[in-house]
Image 1: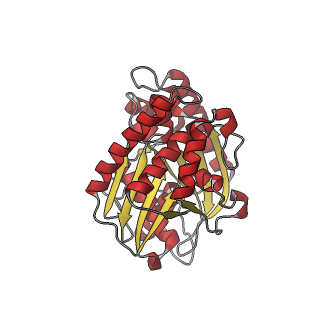
Image 2: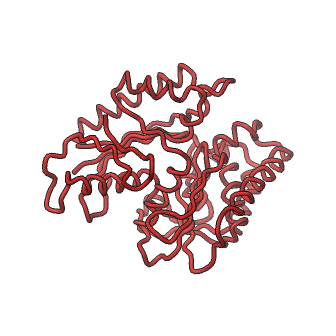
Length: 340
């Protein structure tokens, strides 16, 4: 069947369509996305502005049309910290549903962290043993750790690359004083998170997800995205340390010319690099592996599991699936994956 996942993130709004069936790896079919940094549309009270809301509604209408044109049979739609933490987030969700018919599931930070880990576990397999995963978004930073299909520990921190850039690095290039204060701020949050985790002892596979981590790995010599998802990509803390210092001395226009760095994310690359390096140093990670699957894939896999559990899917075919409504807590308490 063809599944869609509509991701309303802090930097990008993205519809991904995949072809999938139980027991098989979801294969990307098509996608439709737009750069829409909702965090930049926040007013002084922390509410998403009228302009930002119109842009969001316009994209979702496009996404619904795109999914229908490409014969998507089912769709999971969700949002993360950009709407979750906006002062008018509930009103924005209601407006989206009224004007587009799409019900956006508001994931908590812990659910976001856990579902990303779930995707990593499916990608890595059981022979990976314990997994420690880092994920940097525009508004938040997630850490998850465990030995099973779902993590035993999952946290979300207010350390998104876009958020930190907006709030703590106002100049371009950044002032050295602001960079120093940002390092201290991130370190304080990271040390508190580390204290809440159990000892992370070998053997453990340390992974990272998100566009920011992929860009940082590319900066330090990893293969480009054109090489495909099955090429191993790694990020070393020592290499990242050198790039943090280089990025701190560059204006965003120069960063946009670096390999793997897009113009829309160039300004926030320094904040993302500081968070990534601080996480690696705090957790004692010398090197980590970039995982190509993340939150979107986790929700797709969860959706497939839910459809099988409810009997809508079998391994022999897809009888009468259509646009079903499954309000089920299959994997995470409170995670409702229904298309309305």
